[in-house]
Length: 213
Image 1: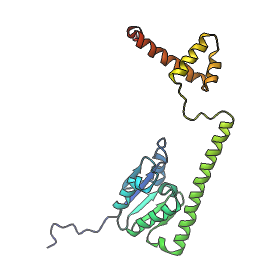
Image 2: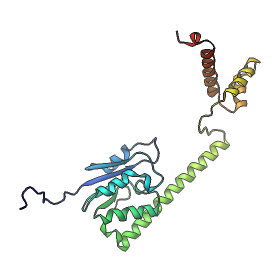
Image 3: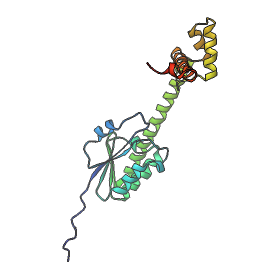
Image 4: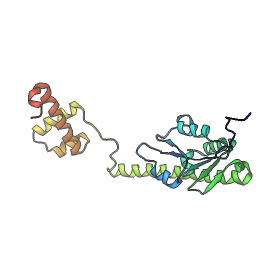
């Protein structure tokens, strides 16, 4: 009667969920902290909300009773205390366990008991507070750098009209350093603009002359 049917018990798996906060970060450090697993769910671009995090949704759908979800730290799983509690609860309801490597904490079906909830709330609140401090320090660092004239931000580009003005000033003998300061850019930006415009102008007026020899 049971011939040909797979009645073997479910083989529990250990999976990893990793997430970056910006596109210039990589996942290798998190994977190294988590260690060997059966499957990895990678969130390569940080999402602003739960709906943006497709890898997390896939991970929650995938896990089953007895599985373990390893995460490098609480702030990699959730961006707020509310999200943290909701995600852990969703995974626990499927019979799986969440293990946070940095905090050395594990939450599963018993996460609903008083002590489990207390620890989750305390550590989650601390992680959220830590993120707020980091954002404040970054903002303060930018303010200080701006006040000192050292914050570059996004590289400024000169408009064609500004480049024409720069050429006229330089032609009258005004030093390029002074011209750059007047336009609010550094010398490298001015030089690039002058070189680019010069090539474009030459190409439009005499394509043969502009072509590389």
